[in-house]
Length: 525
Image 1: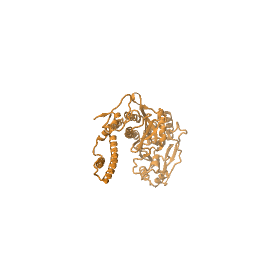
Image 2: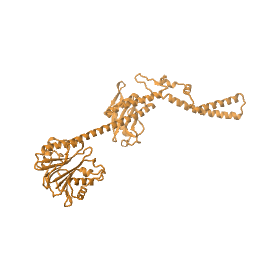
Image 3: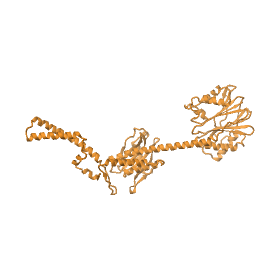
């Protein structure tokens, strides 16, 4: 193995080039040379011995001419092929007095090893690092191969092109970061907008090859390279070469390889982000379940003259439904059903706080409206986060045929007159959601609904009407009325169960709805 200075590589003479690695890979060249030699012998014999006929002389002359021409063409191809394999002219530049020797006969292996090393370095990026840190590290690896280039990377995410980071050679030949405030960033972004249609960058075939251009400031040679993973564009890499020096063939190969490897790094980063997001969502859902489900009542209260049944299914992410029962003195029972304005952990914490307030107030209040008014004051005093809730507070008494109700922006109930054969919507004031304003502009009022023996009342959240069916169709209030009207007089539990089965018959998985679903059915015995 020998090392040869790149500057002396061009001094190889023609004969040495022919003899290097000359094997039988060019059989036609040998044939042309042999034909040329034989025809030349015939011509020389005709000249000196004069024993060759004119016809053979003419034919030999033609063979000599054609064989020499074809041999020259083959020889040219042979020399070109061997020269490209042995030497790929590299516009090597000496920096600060340092000159690097290049492996001559094993140049291909040397170049390939550099690319492999570059790929290995990119794979060593910390998976937990932020995108800016990973990109800076990756561009630093590219600087090891192309130390005099300037790199800038713009990431494409949700059809928006955003500058992430850049690098250039700084003091002591160590690369330094290019920050977003650098004028070069604005200049390059404007040039990208001028050369590419950013809105169409997500199309796989729109920008698939490097795009050269020149800077107006100093006529530097520049390249825009797509960083794409299997046709999915991740971003744009801008590479700037100093004035007077373009990009050699080897440098372009390094950049293409880097762009491919960099796209893998970006894809892995996005996969890691999605995995972490999924883990966070799973953890939040488990916490919601622990905070929320443990606060729900395990059973319905028993009150003389009343039957109470509950249908309750919650979405995996918990969208804010809640309900509760409170047994009070004088054979009273207060029922709460509502929905928070947000879902997830925020809604679970809001319900937990709301329930704590209710427990503190429940023994002091005398009616549903009294509870809502005092809750409104408490929420204003404590400055609860920007959440509110729709709510119905219902109060029933043992063996009494009336319901006292206060509304805070919630869906109004439906009265099922089973013995009269119709379902009605009571004319009630809806009020405003609790916590929507610092304090309700108007006090909440008690409203009364009179029932007859056998009558029932359905209270529900919008998860039943808006998301009752998984096929996306909503369930109208009129449809609920018609379904209730068809159900014969049954117990509260049977009535609610039949209603759910009839309305959600198209749903194959009622237990896992896309939205929380809560329904409470009260029946007067």
